[in-house]
Length: 188
Image 1 (cartoon, rainbow, N blue to C red):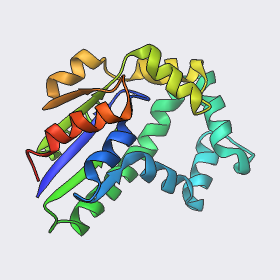
Image 2 (cartoon, one colour):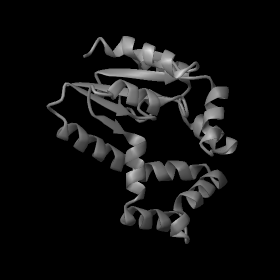
Image 3 (cartoon, rainbow, N blue to C red):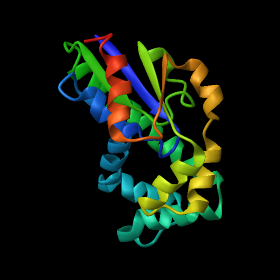
Image 4 (spheres, rainbow, N blue to C red):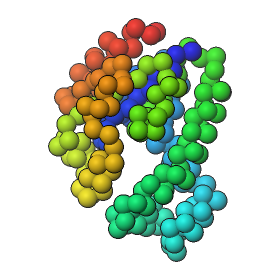
């Protein structure tokens, strides 16, 4: 089994790259999807409401974003709750797919979370900050939240040291596919 980690900075195109890489090649674990699933758990939602003193559970994510923007320490507090749950789901995914040749993992904070040792190959998806901000805003994100989350991440030049491949994603989808196929052909 070859475990391929896909990472990159905020709004760099990790999800798109992960889907391209894994398509018809192996199962894909998405940390972002795991987080969305965790938020759908009523016990987790209740825990978050208590920890962050949120009264409107129907607008939990919106209220949580507001709390994070008010006090940046809240993001660390939230990560301490979510990251262990995501890691647990990642381990279950790996165990369930242990007989597959290739496993793909899309993990935004792979390097920051010190998960490097779990992967045979790490691919870094890179794009300039201006383009990433534009992409983030297209998904209804605010510039203030982008800046806060982006500043929390390690700088690209430091992250790329830990990666086997760096793919620049600043052009179009066809170029991204071509660059990714030149990497994945080494493993299929």
